[in-house]
Amino acid sequence: MKSKKMKNWFVVMIVSLLFLAACNSSSSSENGSGSETGSGDGAFYDGETLEVIVPFSAGGGTDTLFRYLAQYMKEHTEGNPALQVVNIEGGGSINGANEYVDLREPDGLTALATSASTKIPFLIGQEAVRYDLRELKPIIGTPNGVVLYTSPDTGLTEGKDLLDTDQELILGATSPTGIDVMTLLALEVLGVKDNIQIIFGYEGAGASRIAFEQGETNLDYQSGTAYQSDVKPMVEAGQAIPLFTYGFTGSDGDIVSDPAFPEIPTVKDVYIDMYGEEPSGEAWEAYKAFVGIVNNLHKSLWLHADAPPEAVAALQEGAAGAVADEQFIEEGAEILGGYDPLVGEDLESAISALTSINEETLAWVRNYLREEYDVTGLID
Image (cartoon, rainbow, N blue to C red):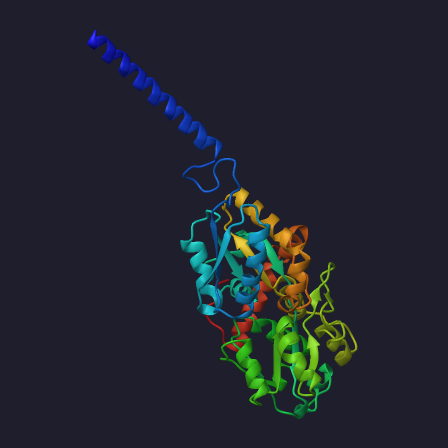
């Protein structure tokens, strides 16, 4: 009798354990819990942290923009992930971008922020570059123009004065392989390169602006957003004179006015004032291509090419939600500098300039930098 009771008790225990295990499994499945990110029915970013690599120092323009954007991306991305900005400096942004593609897993939990300083080394084939921006997935982008200005002490009052002046003109710059490539091409197009002494070696646009303010240089250029906040007050005080903007590329591929500064002539306008005809030639074609890539899409946020599709979709939807948020636009007016962020089809259209640039144009730019500025280490 005792043996029979023990046997029955053992059977009941086994059935009970099996029942509990089944309930546990069902509950786990229903709640979407599991070992893989974004598994189950929950949002991909539920309970997750998205790390945003900014390959520049804290406090700069790219860092400021993406820290601001992070607040709204968290709010508008399904799952409301925490967004953590990580600054990886060095190499003019090459170090951080290389680390992103080389060392970070394509799991959708790490994104890369880039600026024009990240694009140009890639375009001209710097040997240190190991990333290919054409293979990444874009999430959001922001345009940004460029304005070149001078000191009233030079006697210059408009762009065409650069062509015929006895003044010693000095321009501070960073490197002929970074964002300065745009300026070098602009001066080549205008035919005034030999009239200007370019001093390379400044740590960035902030340093070159300070050099201008202290009288070390008498020509300088700044991004549209920096011009709005730092240079416009000098213009209003009579301490600086804008000469031209670098313009934007229109839908037909030609240069159009900077939407934030339509009153300031473009490089194209200045050329026509100087020579009475529209610009043409290899330098001009290269200039237009670089303007489309750099100004029309100045800063961008990317995921790995093989990131989970649900991660890409979630962040793209979050970016669209942020851009549609009136508070994001209003409170970020100074950070955005009067330019509308790009998402969706507008972003894809801007990226097409990067993916479709003519290889012959890039080869011409590389050779130009080698011959005119003794640049080495460029890979064809």
